[in-house]
Image (cartoon, rainbow, N blue to C red):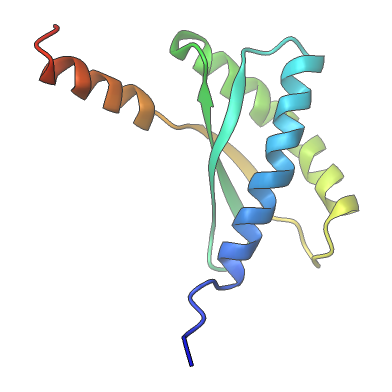
Length: 114
């Protein structure tokens, strides 16, 4: 019988990625924030904190967008507590995911562009 490699923290991360992704999309539209999307969610082992990694369409506006999302984090958490069926919704912390920027920079270096 195959082992279950998809544990509870993975399921919670996937659910948060789906729900928070929708919330971020709505917040960007409603609050005139820079265009951002959720790329990944990591939940601590004790389920107290969820780090939400976001990417920005324009890297220059990422800092402003992440700051605004962190200010909206309590509202997001409150909304999640109404929609999710878990005992305690983790604290949400937004971080900029610069992996796309780094991979683009590597591609430029490989193709000889400064």
